[in-house]
Structure formats: C-alpha cells, structure tokens
Length: 377
Image 1 (cartoon, helix red, strand yellow):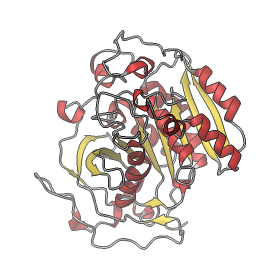
Image 2: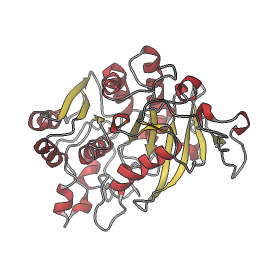
Image 3: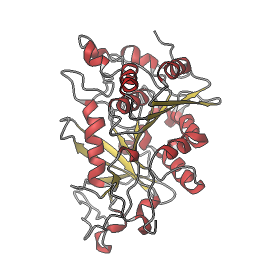
C-alpha cells in the first residue's frame, strides 16, 4: 500500500473512488481553491463565471487567415476558414492543420491578449466525446512563424479530470509560465492542449482502454493528438509531442509515453503515481499489466528504445518521492531517461508544480523537444 500524500483540507474520499481517491491528495487553500481540489468534481469555471471568458468564438487560425476571417460572434457562429494556407517551410516535419476546424469558444483571456478556449471533440477512434481546452502563445500568431510547426504539450489534470481540466484555469499560471519562459529563453512556445481525463466523476480510468468501459487510452493517445493536428501547425515526428500532468494525470502521461514512444517523446510527471490502480481493472490483469509503467519500461529497455524522457516533480512537503526514486533506480536506464526535480516547500497542488516548471522543468523539456523556426531560419 502506498503512502497517502499530505492532505490539508480534510476532505474524505468520495464514493466509488477507492484508494485512488485517498491517494490523490486534495489541494491546500481556501475559497476558489476549493474548486480546484484534485478530489473535486472540477472547477466548472465556464459555468460559474470564474474566468474572464465570455463564450465568444475564438480563432486559432494563426497568421495565415485572411483579414476578413476574424472570428464572428453570436450563438452558433463558427470561425471562418482562412482563405489560403502558407506553404510549409523546408522542414518536412512541418504539418499544416488537416481540418476540419473545430468550433472554439473563449473561456479565459490572459493579460497578454492570448485566450484559452474550449471545444467539443467527438473521438473518431475511441468513440468517446468530451471537452478539450486549448491555448496558443503569442508566437503562434507571429507572421514570421506562419510556415513553422509548434510543439504540443498535452496537459492532464489529477482528481476526477471531469467535466473540466483545471489546467485551463488561468489562476494556476501554466500559460503565463510558458509565456514568461519564452521571453526568458527557457521555454519553447508550446501549444497547450487540455482534455478531460475521465468520462465521469465516479471512477478513475487510468487513461486506459479498460474492457467494457469508455476507451480513455485511445482518447488520450489518438483522438486528442488528431484533434490538435486538425487545428494547429504541428510536427509530424514525436519530437514535437509531450505530456505534462499532475497526480493521476502524471500517471496517465507517463504511461501513455511509455506505451507510444513512437508518438511522444517526453513527460513532466508531477506528484504522480507509478502503477495503475483503478477498481475497474478487476478481472483484467493482462490488460492492466499492459498499462503498467514499470512493465512498459521493462519492455522498452529490452527492445532498445526509442529514447523517452521522464521528469518527475515532487514537493518536499508531499509524500511519494520514494516511489519515484525506486522507479528511477530500477528503470531509469538505457532508453528510459529519468530525472527528479524536488520543489522546495512544495505541496500536492498545481501552483507548486507550475513553480517547479518555472524553476527548471520547462527548460528541461524544451531542450528535449523541437521548437518553431522563423521563416528566415
């Protein structure tokens, strides 16, 4: 039995969550922080008015759109298609948006004018339909990058991860951390894609295709990247794809990376778990083993790669570091490249994990992935 991370809120586990609920520690703080608890049903910011978003259409077409293709307002309005797409740069790895374009609705506006927006995605491969939030940095709109792809960072929440993704709440500062890192030269200008993690509030699905259940593994590994490719300038190779996540989202990100090293290259796993433990695995041991990072790492090591990069983050005031250290000792070899970042005085919450990213993890993952190149380059 694993240690329980520190819980300062005193919230009891909710029915149906089992030991995963007790292991996924709730966050510290009061007021609006309660809406961001890892054990809560989700912040539902768009419904409660906690963000500055007003629901207007959001346009992520980038500098390729025609002047007349500004995002229209009004119920049911959809962003206009750009009149012409730029010719890709000489890099064969660049992929322009494949379409069809999604209908994005603004949920938050940041101080630099960038926006977080939500859309509904019907997963063609998983059969699951859920909400996805996105954010693009200012560089995505810069004409000098019109022919370049951008790296995609898929951000996964802990807790229920349904019906919302708390990384889409501007108060956590993830988007600001990326923007500040770009200006400081310590971060790539990532496109952030923030999907729901689970199909309901009752169980954890371990980001997996548990037999007889919604295929959340396919949703995360296939449908969410397909959605990003449909709407954004991305890289065809895995060099432009990575995860970041906290708690159960860290587990899913690491597990998916190890399952699909041909599609993804790195993960920042904060306060995460190491092994699957959804109660829904009962009677499906073989399938559970196929979603176990330890066994997946063994397989990758035995096969000789490709190289994957795992950066654990853990606060010095939370438990779980021993599990990370054990994983690093046993599996951090060969193609499995691992490191642990200790966040001083850090607890099991998103604010502290973002601080760890600003203190070094964003720079770490930016050195692993491929960044955009200006047209002149």
